[in-house]
Length: 323
Image (cartoon, rainbow, N blue to C red; front, side, top):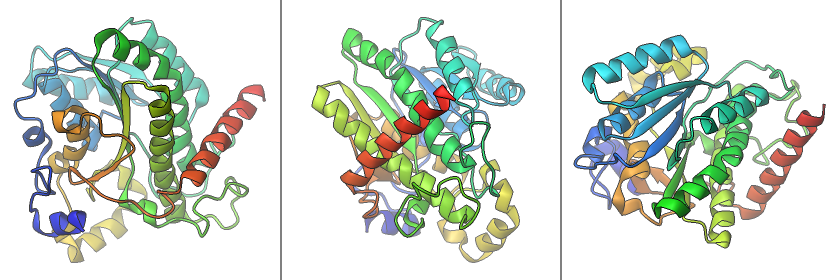
């Protein structure tokens, strides 16, 4: 209910922020000069705004992106605004497990700490297509690539948290679209089949996976007693390059639903809030909308489904690696 009221009115929720809050507003006064963050897809849209605001708060930002040319332009924009900004760029294609492994290798070679991981990149409403690894594109990019990336970086995050005493934070960008998915939530047995594929339900499925991944990883880290939190966020409905496969539909819908759309600075607010705000310390396995905790769908709250997805993802990665 908090999310609906905030969305329609812009009124602040219990956190003190709401749908009208911007990324700069929710991080005002925060000095994060002792933190290093990786953000995937940080060269455009809300990813770029997230990278910019984190750099503005003195975070050392590592942008993982497919298009390094656009990322260099993004870096120039950030540095132009804040000459002392620390921003580095590394090649990353989440639709390739080889690229994910290469990114992690290159990052670890920098010998930097890692406090924050923001799994932001994604694709949306894509026509049916299989990745180079033979996996449906939206599932691979939005979930599987980030699942592997997170697992490969987890030891570095644990080491950083232990050495510094600073809480590590992992943020997965999900979406309210996680409510609109296939009948059983995830098409485990028919994941890569063209028959029955629905580009919007496939997107919702991948966003459901983001929340389930967050919740299951949070549970495992809490059992270990590790000082790392894992949360998922819905950034809001924003017209960004993510919607390139349905731009005409989105522009049409925007005419009739203009009151629920956000601009990019507002869209990046929840991510930046969960990544940096001190009031989120210790919060883990939660789903945030408009900088406030909201209960996700029944599928997203299903622990058994989360464990099944985890095991399925591990088996799929192992089978690809052995192929």
